[in-house]
Amino acid sequence: AQSVTQLGSHVSVSEGALVLLRCNYSSSVPPYLFWYVQYPNQGLQLLLKYTTGATLVKGINGFEAEFKKSETSFHLTKPSAHMSDAAEYFCAVRTNTGFQKLVFGTGTRLLVSP
Amino acid sequence: EAGVAQSPRYKIIEKRQSVAFWCNPISGHATLYWYQQILGQGPKLLIQFQNNGVVDDSQLPKDRFSAERLKGVDSTLKIQPAKLEDSAVYLCASSQGTGSNQPQHFGDGTRLSIL
Image (cartoon, rainbow over all chains, first blue to last red; front, side):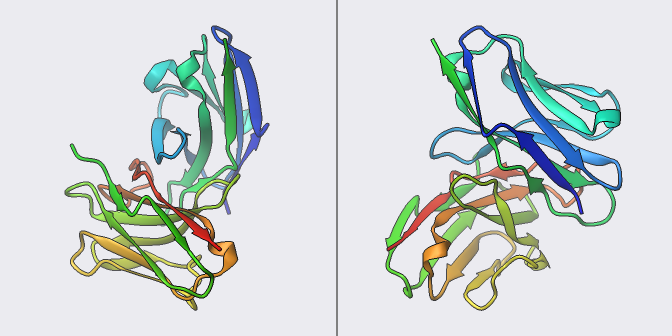
């Protein structure tokens, strides 16, 4: 069964600094990978997704992620953090064969200080 | 386009009482999902509908949880009787289809507190 591991339940950065949120996946078949963001008292919003093709995926709000099969990773980055990026970020995996549920990681809370 | 609508936003009940949540998906979305998100965890799928049929309910505690989507549009999730461990946010999501690359669109959720 597929799974994801998000390293670090909390990540703190200063405004303007690089954001790096780590996600490693486990899947016996090529995965589809997603990053979602959740603001307080709101649902999840899709940031970006990897299905096939280009391994560097660009999403909304200046975020991007790179699929690295050799490292089974899909880390989320943003060159310069903004105060409005403070939120909970979830990595998720779903296999592309048959029916498989979307499996979420435990989330990483991003804190941005001025 | 209008997003996924959920109500109520908050609900407080005592254990052993019953509660129901309502979800209206994005227009035209055939697939509807209910997730449970316990504090500090990622969402966990409870049940998935394709139109008005159940695709997966393997993680739904069927002794107390039930869900329906009678006309293939709106859906309700019910808990009866509620237990303390049911305290969580219940998220509804919808997608156009069931393909693995189809993004899911989430509502703002219902926060349930059990006293």
